[in-house]
Amino acid sequence: MNVDKSLKFFVLILMLLIGVTGVYAARGLYADGSFWLFEMLSRGSFYIFDPHRAYAQMLMQLPVVISLVLGTQDLNFLIRAHSFGFVFLPLLFWLAALAIQINTRLFWFFLMAFCVTYLRSNFFAAGEFNITYGMTAFCVSILLRQNINRTLSVLLVLTSVVLTHSYEMTLFLGALLGTVSVWRLWKAKQDSVFVRTCVILAVIFFLVSSYVGFQSAFFQRAYDGRSTANLGAIAEIHFLYLITVPALATLLYATRIKRYAAIFVACLASVIIFYMFYAFRLDQSNISFGYLSYAYRALTGLILIGILIISTFFYYSASRSKTESCSYSTISFAIISTIFFISVASPMFIHTYGFSKWAQRFETTSLALAQHTPINETGINTNHGWTHGYNWVWGNTYTSILLRGNAEALVLNNSNYVNPAISGYESLKRSDDSEGSRNNLIDRHPLNLLIKKGKLF
Image (spheres, helix red, strand yellow):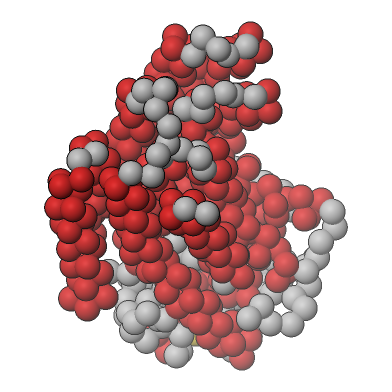
């Protein structure tokens, strides 16, 4: 097995490990995730709160809903089923996209797209953007395959249907996918009638997704879109890193000249080493990894578009007569892509471990509480260290309910690190013994049909 193939299998194994550890750590509970799961379990079905994102929401929530339909009552199992839908399902689309390109150089472009999107934004797993970006990469990977079989053709159509109601970024992603599809219809004369028909159907759905994204972004949002775009983050080192490495690596791939390759490899290695030193030693901003994931969800979508456009250009500009030889530039490109992957996967692994330790403390504290207690009066979240800084706005009450199995005594917000916000349960007082208090109006056993069989961690 050559170096290129060895690195590809190494990457795929680490990606699987990211998914497995994310599910085990119940990372789907982070931030808004606990609220999503609480709503699903209390309803016993899907929790669809945005019609323009409905299909993506249903796909992500499917593991929990299927479990409930099958009669599952184990709350701990449902928590991890929820993380499977939020953490692992988007990853499956990326794994499929990479597997399709396993024998081509485009594999490394798709890996970089994975790095700047999933590895930067999926720590905050409660968002339709994660699965939307994965589905987009999957569709482009199919369209950039020399021979599309019937199975992939059907999967292309099905995925394009889900994309019609997934996330506002489809305003741009839909246009990109439609363009790549039309280009294939024009260039790939070898496709069968069945394949071409499926691609035409996909084009229609891609255009619909672009229209729905436009409607949602400009006419259905109750908030200012500028805050979502987070344009101020463009100048941050974390974001500049996500642009710089793929850009320099693309130049390395494009030159294919041995003497220039060495220069680019040296530059890229320097950038990666500097960033890792900055991220782990110099960054004193006290901004949590999860918050950065939240902030970059839209911006990384734009980088994704750029990388997919470059991938399409290289696919159609490459001579079909040339073999996929392991030249110096190709091996250098593979090595740099792998190091880039490791540099952004490392924080994901570290913070997944950190979140699991945080959640473990949260569960132990929640089970021991006798009354509602602000989080800053517990030992759960005492600083912004690697295993502490995972508190999120108003999610503590719902995390308490899920980890306790009831709402008899909750961890409230009132955090020194995140401004407190009001939720239905946040208005509870510390004791609900007094007759006629507002606490009696709130169901203290909202998940009474479910059973917590021991501790989750």
